[in-house]
Length: 105
Image 1 (tube, rainbow, N blue to C red):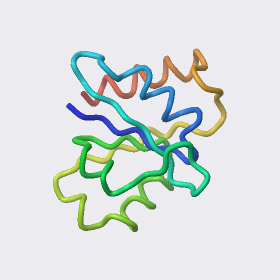
Image 2: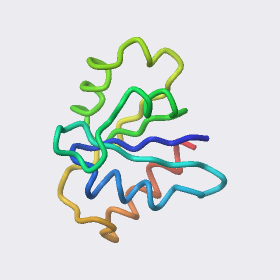
Image 3: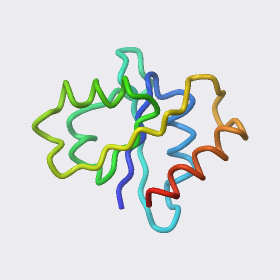
């Protein structure tokens, strides 16, 4: 399964998720951000690639639905409700991601 993780700047939360889940149980993972200054900016190509899109906050879900409405018919979009208060690879963030993402796979 192809997993796409989305946050605002793709520097902490979604990048941590990508590192945790790429190769996990055979899954492929990528990550992107919704802001213009993102490390990797969310594109239509990434949306098309993904089987499941995990967003860190409701605002990310809203931005995806507004910008790519025609690409989402067969996509699962899951909001993880993880606030932007963690550093990259933070142990608490890893625990939250493993628990919440694994429950959806």
